[in-house]
Structure formats: C-alpha cells, structure tokens
Image (cartoon, rainbow, N blue to C red):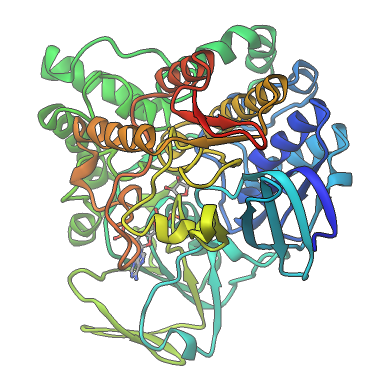
Length: 541
Ligand code: NA7
C-alpha cells in the first residue's frame, strides 16, 4: 500500500526537476521530488571535477520563468563554472521555497502504473512507496555514468575517480602520477587543470576531438546590464531559435563565399571563443560534407599551430567524423597542455589498453605506472537514467524492454503504453542539441498546461498513441538522416555503450520548430495522444 498520495512525483532535482516542482506547485498540485544526491543540482551537483564549466554562456543558460530572478542574479563569468551554477540553483530553491517538497538521498527504484487508480506507484531505495497520478522523469540526459569495461579496472590499488562522481571536497593531485581516460568535453576541461597540479599526467585518448577555445572571462557588468534590460526579447529569440542560444542566424552556405572570406570568418569565431563561431556561421556546416570540411580543416590547422611536437599534433588531429557530429568541445589551453613536459598522450586506437593492474595502465605498447586513475568516460546518455528505474506501464510492460531496440517516445515526451508518465528532455526532443534550460522550460510549461487541460476537460489519463509515436520516431530519424550526424559513432547514437542499440536519439529539427509542433499538438486537442476519463472507454483525441 502506498504511504502517501501526490498529484505528481518528479524524479530528479536538477534544472528540470526544480522548475517542474515550482511550476506544478504553482498550479495547485501536490508534488514530491525525489533526488538521489545529497544535494540538489543534478548535473551541477555531481560533476565537480576540476575545470567543470558549462559551455553555454551564463546569460542564456539560466531560467527565464521569473523576471525577478533574472534581474537579481549576477553572473560573474561568461561561461558559468560548476560552483556558480550550483549556487544559482541553491538560490532558486531558496527563493521559491522548493526544499520542503524535495527528498534528498532517495533514489527512485521502481515506478508501476496501476490500472485501478490510473496512477503510478513509486518505490524508492529507502523502502518508501507512494502513489501519484503523474510521474515526471526529470532524470537528466547525461546522468548515468559510463565506466569503461577494461580488464583489471577494479584491481587498481590507487585512487580511482569518475568525473561525474567527483568527491565533494575535491582532489589534490600534487606530486602524483595521474592517468585520465577519455577526451570528450569533460576530459578536455579537466586535463589542463590536472596537468598543472600533477607530477605527471598520462592522457589516454580513443578519439581525437575537435576542441575550440572557450575564451572564458569575467562577465562585463555593462553587458550584463544591457542583457537584463532586454531579457524578454532575448529569451524569445532563444526559444524560437535552432539551438536555444542567442546568436546570429546564418544566412548562406560555407560554399557561397571564397576561401579568404571563409577563413576570416572562422578566424573571428576562433578569436571570439565558443562553438558557434565555427559551427554556427554557415547554414550547412553539419549538412554538407564540403562545407563541413572547411570548418574541420580550419580547426586542424590551429591544432598544428599550437602543438609543438608534430607527432603529438597528428595524434590530436580529429579524423573520421565530421566536425560537430560529436559534441564539439569547448576548452581552455587544451592543446597547449600537450606542450608541457609533464604530459604524455597515448593514442589507444594505435596502442589499445589491454589491462589495468594495481599500479599501472598497460597498453600493447608498454606500461604507465600511476597513482590515480580518472575516468572521463562519459555517460549512458539520454536513456540510461530512465532505464535504470524499473518502469512498468500497462499490463506490467517494462519501459527498458519497450526501448530494447532504441527509445520510442512521442515528441520525446511520453511513451505509448505508459499513461501519465512524462519525460523531460526525453529521446526524440531537441534536448542535448540545445541549450538544456530552454528545452527544460519548454517541456515543463507544456506538461503543466497539459495537466491543467486534462483537469479542465475532466480527463484523468493521457497517453501517447502508438501510431503517432512511431511516426514521430521515424521523423526524428529522417531529419537526422538529412544531416551528417549519422556519420559519427557518437553518444548521440549510443555508440559509446557496448551493446546499446544504434539510433539517433535527440531531435535535430531545432528548438523553435519543435516548440511549434508541441504547441500545435496541444492546440489540436492533444493530437496523437489518447485522453480518457475514468470508467469511460478510451477515445482518440
Ligand atoms: P563523452 O563525450 O562521452 O566522452 C567520453 C570520452 O571517454 C571519449 O573520449 C570516449 O572515447 C572515451 N572513452 C569512453 N570509454 C572508453 C574506453 N573504454 N576506453 C577509452 N576511452 C573511452 O563524455 P563527457 O563526459 O566528456 O561529455 C559528455 C557530455 O557532457 C558532453 O558532450 C557535453 O554535452 C556535456 P570515444 O569518443 O567514445 O571514442
């Protein structure tokens, strides 16, 4: 028997869960949030590794739902650090009195749909059992850490870390020999900082990545004032944009200009810092191979300029995937770090890691003795966190099994056979290809309106229609197929997790277009969803 009944249970207290709580509670619902961490913040609670920073600018990577919040919070840097984001979220929780409905250190282990009550029974690792009419997964796209499957990993006798499970007090690497495995966005941020501290750092690289300089700096107070004065318009631009960020809209193909002009444009982007100045200046950079190659070659030339040892430079040159089809990394002194005497780069494609011993990382080429091992090996992205919960819909069907060939969700919001269950930034929505905060607010607002409309219409369940879901999943694939994204073995397609089905998970059609689709669906009586009243036969809306 359930111990307590809620209108909605929200799983996770990161950016998504916090706003979901605020929004749903403001609509008069009784809400409980469960959070596995000992504090709120989600991504920004767990990822405390050295150098951790968001690669979307702070003025845009922030909530827009409260004008007062927008005005009172002062960002200090162009790109917010993990610590600053955590302070921001803690401020939000205080300001909107959120903590009273959040239970920390509690992991949701199971969620079962109950036909009798037309609601969800939710179980936690503390043995609690509660029920709720609606269950909202605010579990994050990058929250289930991926540990490398390397023989002997467990036998390592030194200190072992995963960047997404970093100790709260930090780690002092002074005088120690450190190995970092992984050179994605996380490794790229952590490596330069660890290199400054460690006696020696060995970087194990499987895929060389395109890295652009962040050019992080203190935020100009005048700029911040200007942005705050025009926030409503700026936010609206983000909401209707392709990626949810404030940036000029590209006007033409990279092929439409001559080499000199293109080079100058990329050089300006490189000097300005961030990914947009390289990936977002032409309309077809991730669509046309020739256009893509111009941006990729520009970055390759910069790597050769920066890295002094030609052999090391060649190892660091990305090859085999178009630029932007794996998440572009935004770094500070990343390539420069490989000019340091205390840093060694090991290309594990050429010389694979065969084993980890109690004292070393062993490759086909030799042994690297280390005192500490850092796994910057990423996440079981987009589906990992939800699949880790035993979610059972109609007739006890398991969501993990329903997704065995790849995730299926209508609009990335709801899965057929799982009534009254919502996924915030789920697979099939723009999610990781966008400014997450913009996408989170859009989903939460849509869900809140949906619940209000259900109530007003006397409905008590809503469920994705299987056919509408199939069409949406096909559409997500079709749009991805029009781009170069499928040419990369990225975590967007699940390629980083052995055995995970290869299917492109985020929606590449753009934040603004996607929002219009969601709004049309709602306006059209929740087209593609089935809504039902208790004791009435189901009717297709
Ligand atoms: P990523 O981007 O998935 O990067 C993980 C890195 O770890 C990447 O270089 C992987 O190589 C490497 N990796 C993973 N498993 C192994 C094994 N077994 N051996 C060697 N190397 C391995 O995760 P991040 O945390 O850096 O970033 C995730 C997102 O967070 C990022 O995109 C931003 O959106 C924020 P691979 O490329 O798979 O060959």
